[in-house]
Image 1: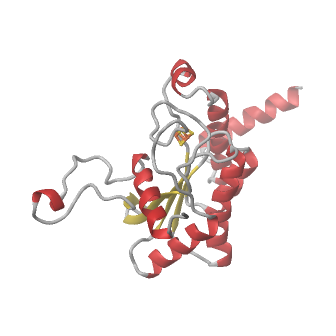
Image 2: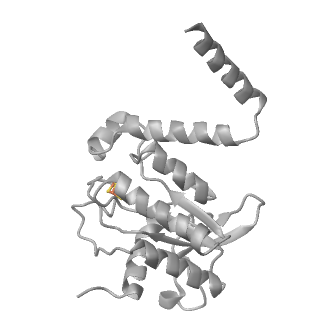
Image 3: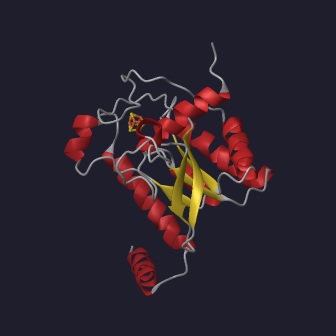
Length: 225
Ligand code: SF4
């Protein structure tokens, strides 16, 4: 039987809590339902982040899906894991974001995902969500997308047009570690994505002395060829 939207929201907000992305993720676990009193540090679904102007904002923090074709040993959502699975459509994520925003529960969206079908297919769906929020619904709230490591540069660029923040997981500190624990991932591709992201950010940013020097030396190298 197909899970209801509420059931999928419970699964996919809980699954997103492992993405340590936000200001409220580093504390011990306390829950007043078991110990009495008021409040809890265990809830999932809404997290906090800092906007560029220093404000602390609330974000709906969810995965598009916790299905994944990869089998990274350290990840609860790996293909061999026995967790309950769920998936949203892009339209459902758009609807949830708008409805939570209208009710004043959140000021933005943090979206990550397991990899379904391919990196590009997953990234395309994430871009569609951000694009529809911005261009169809004129959503002016905050959007943070966790990019898919091996998605093509064109899709990462598209994501940058609609999101306030893009980030990417480097997974493990050494190539040897990735080969051992996340064998389907290619460290070269992760570095390529991060490098392309940095170049795009530099391209769009106000030029600094350092970027001007780098651009000049690139031009000189090209002129010598
Ligand atoms: S690709 Fe991401 S979601 Fe999939 S198993 Fe690896 S870390 Fe988990």
